[in-house]
Image (cartoon, rainbow, N blue to C red):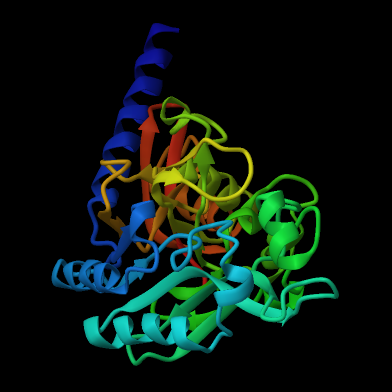
Length: 354
């Protein structure tokens, strides 16, 4: 029994060493993404947003993400009279930022919808809670109108004054807005905040899961009643990214959330929590080191590690790793490593389409 134990331990050690050696092989290049945790007092300040884009580009970012409601602020009733169509004046301003800074730009903003109903002000329109993705040439690549909107979220007094209604909310966008397109970051999709929630029935996320994206961008608008709640479950943007990635099992999920007080809508006082970051297809997440800094840069690797149980030898890895990665709509990159000798190894995976 003693001899068998020593031999077994020796094989475990060899497997661990082989795995560590293989894990040092070069992996594909990373993507640098800038997340703007826009202070709430800077909404609509396109000079400030251009400044963030220029800083991000100077630091090597390929993509910059602004949060939900970056033009008026989330639940600002001014959207019912001042929001513009997309394309339109405000999406054009983000396009100008993309061209000037030579960077991909994603942002959340209100969008002018159909004419408001009877009893509303003459200049009143419905409003969508939308997101856009623009390439460095200033071209609109993705346009998403949030499907999963919160009903009666605006201040009731403003709803009655502008729309002649006792309560009001953003108009839900069509589910057909859930699409993917190829970008330098892979098969890419854009959602807005609660469309990335996994709460049942998770309609928008379920539709996206069918499309098997491998890169999902989310302008977040995660708030809490008090600052001390921020970062805890239910009040953490990166936590929601982790849940969405675990649900999709195919995509990196990356997004930016604002900081500062939310001054519009119901359920006040309220504060934006920041806590921006990303999650891998396994749900493993990385949050910005400074959860409230206005501009943070993150490195998103092209590959991720998926748990495969114990792998005892270099010869066994090809039997386990392809299936392990396939469960995440990914391909094994030829790397593996033992994380807990005799108990757990991980395989290096690259999302299909990268």
